[in-house]
Each structure stands twice: as structure tokens, then as C-alpha cells.
Image 1 (cartoon, rainbow, N blue to C red):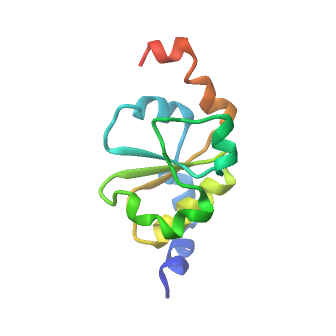
Image 2 (image 1 turned 135 degrees about the vertical axis):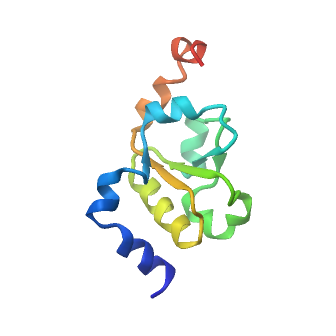
Length: 124
């Protein structure tokens, strides 16, 4: 069985029910400043031109196979996009490539942007 087959096979009811594969927007807010967490923005360059997150590593999903060496393997990678779909693809791909600590953001872009308004930022 190859690595991708194994990752998919492991995604059973217990795995999904535990929720360890995901992080909420509140979890991201709490994780900001934690040097063990790397936020991975997998949106396209065009999307980032409109809304950039300077605290995140930006690698568009379609470039990820050629840029894996830019990601640390000893940290938790949290993949996000403007929806949840590409984050799930990146999660699965990174797990298949041997990254042990990976999560997908379960929030929309609108929810993510909200935590960077002055009120929430002041509380960080």
C-alpha cells in the first residue's frame, strides 16, 4: 500500500470523530505566536494579492509538490485556503509525504479575517 492509500485508509469514523486533523479559527487565534505552528496559505497568488496574511507561509497548492523543502517537518503545519477544500487536499498530500503534524483549518476566509480586526488583535 502506498502512502496516499494509507492516509486515506486511516480516515475512518474514529479518525474523523476525534477531530485531530482539524483546527478551528479559535484554535488559530490561540496558536498565533506559537513557534511550533506554521500556517500554510495555499491560495493562489491572485487571492493573496487581495488579502494577504504576512504571518503565514504562502505556497499555492499547485506549487506544493515542488516546494515541500520550504516546510519544516518538525512543526505542526496548518493548511488553509479561502474555503476548506484545498486545505483538505493539502492536508492529505502532506500526510502522504510523511509530514506527521498536519491540520486543516475548518473556518472560512471571512472567519479568519475577523480575528485580525483591532479588537481581537489587541487581545493577543
